[in-house]
Length: 492
Image 1 (tube, rainbow, N blue to C red):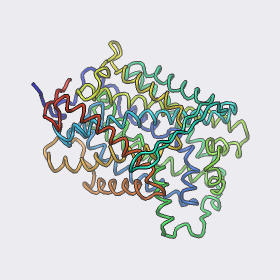
Image 2 (cartoon, rainbow, N blue to C red):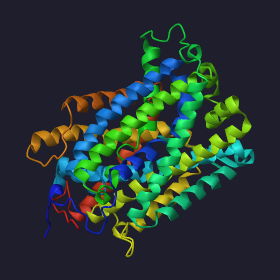
Image 3 (cartoon, one colour):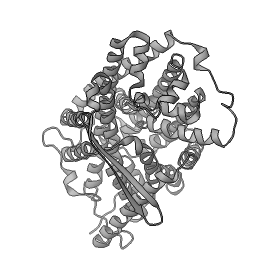
Image 4 (cartoon, rainbow, N blue to C red):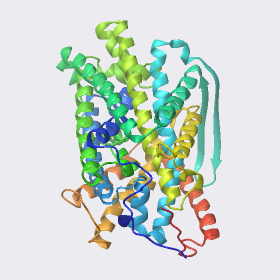
């Protein structure tokens, strides 16, 4: 006999240990957010807007993720289970109805986007390593693949292998090894990683501010703030990159079943991590622009130099040794991000499997340390394979896929949940509701469509959704689930 249980009545996952407090959760969020992204993408944001006014991308991006962070905070505090958005979508849209489909599509896209995000950190580690060890950049295999899709057009992908590729794979494997243990040990290690990340950022900001030249930092071109189509398209492209760099503030929601006092810890860690990282990004970028002319950044946006622009920045100020030290610190930051991403994302397939909506093998828990080891190993293995991809070409596609399949559905969903279930337990309520949700919807739609050649990334999202729908409908037909029936078997 099928059974239907409210998510709010199943806030506990007894096989997991609630061992992460506010400081640990904030640290894990921050090392997820401050990966290698901002150290690589700064030239891309400058090039997108054509001057220091690109700082608007970081500022508006911060406002957008604060609004979205309030959505995550309300939902995360109300449904504190490992798996995060998987449970939110199912509860909002109906466990026996559309919610079953929405939560499946979320897991489906995560199967691709999560390992790609993890791999991006691994590859970022390897790219900065080429500054210290140039031979790592030697490519011995590269191939482009193209596929014509009816009605959609060309889909392309690039594979490449270099010595750096195997360094990236090694980083992924080592992170899996470190995560193969009890969550309380991981929390302590995350704080240790966080200290290294903050030291890196503080040194970069200090170096910039002590050598700061306002004439360079605020050298705006004549048309910098002319509100024409180029300005708005450039802002859209800059926002996409900024959003990618800010992502990770919600990481705590994915391992919420292992968080102490989640009703308070989840909102606090989300908002604290956004506020701190936004301040760090804005201050760091202003400090760097006060040392290196923005035109130099713009010129490196399409060259190999953008891969280790901070190393070049430190070398210019203090010499080659300082460049090497900065490189090592940023590699530490990239490693920390991979560690945090693997921790959070490995809990999501486990949660879906436990709920009967994914492969049973993901349910397995380590007998001694009580963590989902099969999910961790599989996600890490897929991420290692994705290290052969050129991720610079698909970052935009990842952002678009997540916005369409997850973020917009979740933001609209929090409004639906307020209307359909006004008595639903809400330990934390969104500030100024519904304004943040509406701002987040408008902001993400702007990122989706207000960019040059936005159709390219939308194609990837459409293909992924169509394939996911086919798999879901075939599977649900065999199981007698929505829309072919109401059978739902939940395993706790």
